[in-house]
Length: 585
Image (cartoon, rainbow, N blue to C red):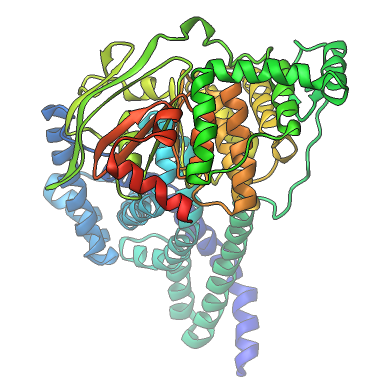
């Protein structure tokens, strides 16, 4: 054997190189497979630990979850709190001595590393799930997704990305920690190194080779996992999409296959010609029929002078309204005409308390098909909580929420099925971060409405084009501006074709220019007859588009009526004071 250091290393590699390679192979097989199994165990345990439980659930479910979680907590604490070497000795030798169970070394090796990894991964997964913005869950609930669907398609993909570094850490730890399996006779890299060192009496040189091999294995795995992380992140840029399936008409779009080129051209010519005023008059009449009486509209405009909300619509705005009325006549969303006037929602004596804090008290009002109800009031008055109760994102403490005459606030309500018919748009958008714009608008259709992908894609494209976001179907939410995100959120809600759409301060997080973009989209929806309940601080918008205004203060409805009554001649002193602030502003 050579006497110099490097010579001995070369000699060891030449004579015992295959022993090292066999040990490294066994190390990687055990580490990779056990990490994979451990991740599956960890995900299962972590998901069970985060299943929501409420007082509405039956006692059997709550008791079962309590017992299962207790067992899982004991498993996690025991295997995180004891050395893996001790676990290996206990499981391999103890199972034979105490339980007369003789398992193979390889089965024991996979079992030991897997359950140890699973215990660590369980807490990692639980933390990963809890780290996801609650708005992601609420966004999924709002389109009718169940808890399982939400976890599979929204939460877990994002949690997986968040915990990828820890998965990589666990794999690297397992590559190194397989050395403890030498105590049960597994010939992995460390065992092979000890054998070579003992046979040749070259401990320093033998373990130098092992150290380099461990580093090469862990570094390669680390780089591969980094590449996977980048793949999960998606591209930094996106391409603007173009489509010829939708015919552009004066800034609006017809449903695919239903609008002819002749009608599109005629509509565009009408807007650009001298006949636009006649079209505007018909469009104004249509809007008035949806927003109350002509008297209400007139009263609302007279209120401008008193409260300083703005001027009458310009001629161009009237022309655009006329174009919207004509081009949207083929919209499949307009299936509520037969329901006009029929009561959709009735709130009776609704109350909501968080502990001793009563946020809502004795709320009573109703919404009929075709109504546009705007809820106004100062911040903290309970407006958003009321909307969340209507969508069952919050459970009312008392009272009833009647949907087509059925109380949906009870414990037996299928909340997911109800939310699929009553959509919601949030002030913070709540778009799914792991999906593109197009996927955001398709997932509810395919998973909840059970549409095939082709039909869901066609519908999603239609509504994205309607809100002016058709070119951005390949973008992720992080690549959009606030106004763009909100328009996509509206398109996602519309793609579910709801009977009622709830808007929770949709412009509160936007700058003035973006506010205009979103309000324009909402005005078009009003013209199409969509039933809406809108929580807003935009007083001029509330006056112009609604036929029913509700003013809330301190958790109660202080006054409600038509826009003319509320903005033109309010009776309640609190309403007068609230509206006077906007005149002073």
